[in-house]
Amino acid sequence: MTPMTALSTAATWRKRAACQGIDPQVFFPESDEDAEEAKAICAMCPVRQPCLEHALAHREREGVWGGTTERERRRILRQRRKSA
Ligand code: SF4
Image 1 (spheres, rainbow, N blue to C red):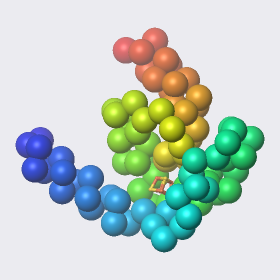
Image 2: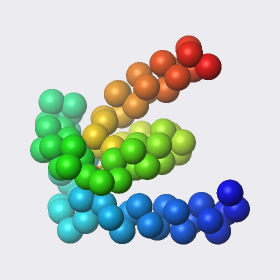
Image 3: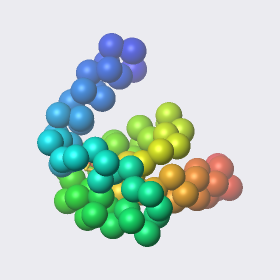
Image 4: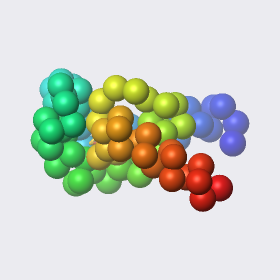
């Protein structure tokens, strides 16, 4: 994949994001316990998987991405490393 393809792929999934127009603060909760509202939106999002993969690839440290908190993404990365 060329960088331009990667950019246009990212732009494509972002355009379909269910969180468009929603207060970004919803996706940056104070704690994992406060992440339920964001997770509920992500659960209905058609681009949940590419969003999650983007967050994993870029080691996004803050916020809910693809229905996961930062702690959950760290767990996914650990599991993937173990099974690699
Ligand atoms: S999965 Fe969640 S954070 Fe990602 S684009 Fe969809 S609604 Fe937004």
